[in-house]
Length: 230
Image (tube, rainbow, N blue to C red; front, side, top):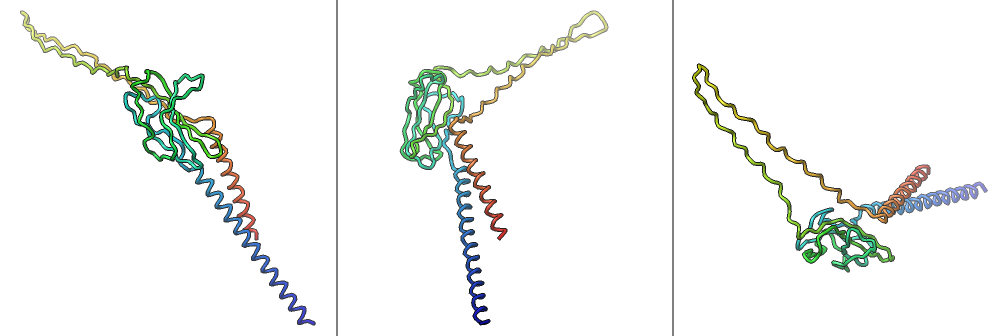
């Protein structure tokens, strides 16, 4: 009788030990899964974005211009490089180049600005995704084919009068001193404007991705605390 009770207790202990091991294994799997999700979120946050690297903001363009940038994002379907007038109340864009494959820090298009009237314009790089949404980035530019670049005049050297000695019937010898001249001071040049341009959609998308990363980190911290308790 006692032997039977001892066997049952041993079986119960073995079953309990297996249950604890299985529970710990399941929790380890869940913890690894959430770690993977957090790493994917961080990688998505640091993934290359859409960008026009050249020309820069407010740059004056003349003749043939090489436009470079990056179009390499997940779920890429197509992209388009367009331009429009700076004052564009009708939201009318003129296409320069379309893309069916991602591009990483390379030439997007070679644009001939000679046929375009001088003025202020905006370059736009727009990417379409598989879910039907789109993301874009824009850079303000200036076209000045007819405008002649102004060169600042070089300062002119001022001749210093030679020393003149005048003889007069006195025991003193007088000499004319040279008149000092004021040299022109250099004019400080204005700092270039910030080329960064963010659209409202990009701000919302960045906030959403940041919220997902924070939520994933909170879940990960909670799981680690629960695992340590066991």
